[in-house]
Structure formats: C-alpha cells, structure tokens
Image (tube, rainbow, N blue to C red; front, side):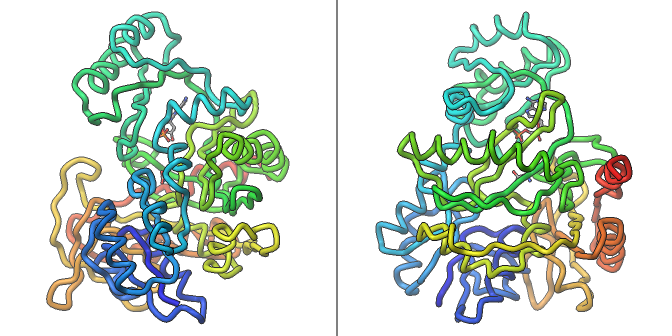
Length: 424
Ligand code: AMP
Ligand code: GLY
C-alpha cells in the first residue's frame, strides 16, 4: 500500500513512524515532509495547502490512502478534493473541519447541544465588542474566530488589554479574515487536559490523555507557542472524569456533528479544562495535536493504519484500539527566540542511539548534514513504566543532542508529577 501523509512537522514524523509498523505499507510519501522525515519517507516538495498540487501528486503516484494531518488543508477541503479523485483519507471533510476552523461555529454548536464550555458572546463589529469588554468580568478571553496559528487567543487581565486585543484582531486584522468575528468568553480555571479521539462519525474511541506545555519558558512564563512538550497519560484525568467527559462532551459532540449533517471522521481533539464545576471544552481541533501525538502514538499498541482506515470505512466499533499502560514524555528542542524571531541553519548532532526516539519538526538536509530550519526543531520522546522515569529518560536523551542556539523547557512533566503525588 502506498500512503501519503500531508504535513511536515514532528506530529507528521510520529504518524509516519507508526504507520510504517504496518507490513502492508510499501511506500510512504510526505508532502512536504522535512529533512528529518526524509529518513522515514519520500519527501515531495509540495506545500500542505496546495490542494491542486497534492491531489495531482496523489493521483500520479497511485496513492492508496492519504492522511491529512495539519489544520489548514483540512479546513480548506483537501479531504473532499482527494475523495473526489477516489482516494480514501484520514481526516474530516471541510464541512466538519469547521469545528476547528471557526470558533463561532464551535461555540454555537456547544450551546445548541448543551455541551459544557465557557459562557461567551460573539461579535462581528468592533464597536459592540469594545462596549462589551468595558463591563465584562476580568480576566476576560478574546479569541479570533478563524485559524491563527494558535496565537488568536488573548487572556486579558485588564480592560486595556481587552480593548487592545479587540482592536488588533478586528481592526488591525492581525490574523487577517480570521478576525472578522470574535468570541469574548468567560475565563475558566483548572488543570488542562488534551484528549485526542478516533471517530468514524458514529463511534468514538478516546486515546490516552495528555498534557501540553504551551508557554515558551519554564514555569509557564513567556509567550504562547505551538507546544513545548507533553506527557501522557495526564494524571488529572481520572477514570471518573473520563467517564463524565464521554457522556457530557465526547459523545454529545459527535452526535451533534452528525445531527448538523457534518459527520466528523478522523481525529477529534478535545482541549478540556477541569473546572470546579466539571470538565468544560476550551477548544476543539479537527486533527492530531502537536506535540500531543509524539507521546500518544508511541503508547498505541494497535496498528495505526488499521484504526485510521476504520474511521474512514465506518467500522471503528469493530476495530480494537489498545494503549499501553506505560507513560511517555516529549521535550521539544527549539531555536532560541521561538515563537518570535529565531535563526536557522545550525547543524544538529543527533547520536544514532537516540535518533529513533526523535521526531523532527523543523530541519533540512544539506550535503548529508541535518540543519535547523524552524522554531520547533526536534521532539525528543521517551516511554517508560512510570511518568518520573519517562521524564528523566527524555531529558537524558535531550542532553545528548546538540545544536547551536538550542533551547528547551526544563520542567516538562513537573506539574503532572506534582499532581500525581497529590492524587496518590
Ligand atoms: P486555545 O488556542 O483556544 O487552545 O487557547 C490557548 C490557551 O488559552 C488554552 O490552552 C488555555 O490555556 C487558554 N484559554 C483559552 N480559553 C480560555 C478560557 N476560557 N479560560 C481560561 N483559559 C483559556
Ligand atoms: N498542541 C496544541 C495543538 O496541537 O493545537
């Protein structure tokens, strides 16, 4: 079987490594992939958002199954375009990817179907939004409607910050058309949990829970990033909470999408906050998380490609999905300066002993050397019997990897380990 994976980050590298465990896979193509992924797949220089280029390649290469991993091609309708050419895909169609593509859609869906989330107001007019934030309880949360590279959310502690956020998003169009509408919502508190779930639109199977670390600096300081590290499972996510989420959030969401004529197939990502009033949805993503995938997939014991195809064929109810009860930790090694300006082009020294556990996010290959080529450069994962061991092993591996200007957080897993001690 010839498999196509769209995307070129650490998440895609983790997906590719796992898919290759299936013996029927004869070739894997990554579009565009990256210099590290090139060790595991044939990289083809076509952008993940080039719908025409990707479908043309898929047809000419005789692709049997495609995995669309990033948000933007999903929201643009790449799955629909590939299906039109007769190529089955992992991922939602455009009309279901809107659950991530529009926060206004997601909030209204949750309200209509009684799915717990923060109280909110929607605005399509800056003057009305500005009037509202003058009296909204502080802190207040201002979100651009559309995709904004994870940066379209402002937690405003003061009225001035709230006003600035409204002006930057709606008037200065910092995120382009994504700011035509905004959501202003209630500030929630509690531990955050990421739950990715396989779904074929009818059946939903949650994967092992995880915890992201979004801020750039130790102890949750600095700017928001795409994610600086993850651990799994998330100790805050107890069996009891998992059952509550299944009944009040997960199943109601896929039923709601079906009722709206937008059946969701693929990976649905629930960004949850465990508030004093119970678990609530912070956000939905229509895809695997990055770097959640780099800790979740190493714990998957079932064959990934078989499970993916079951979400496409509608046979997930009859397909076993098993996870190991071990723990995993992924530490992101980034270029100094990320998520703001950073330099690239530095050689990466990656000893063979650790390379197998490294997912390459931003690197290129030149004259046989691997060079840094992105903000997030590597995801270094370790799997162990316990979380403390996984965290220690991941950092031991990080210390063996070198590139100039490298930076990483030193406290990935610290909060989870403290929580684990509280819970025990
Ligand atoms: P998002 O891009 O929607 O995941 O938001 C980014 C981060 O902002 C989340 O991971 C939360 O930490 C935080 N956040 C978003 N919405 C809220 C909210 N209503 N209350 C508190 N924190 C929030
Ligand atoms: N790590 C968060 C995300 O993938 O959106």
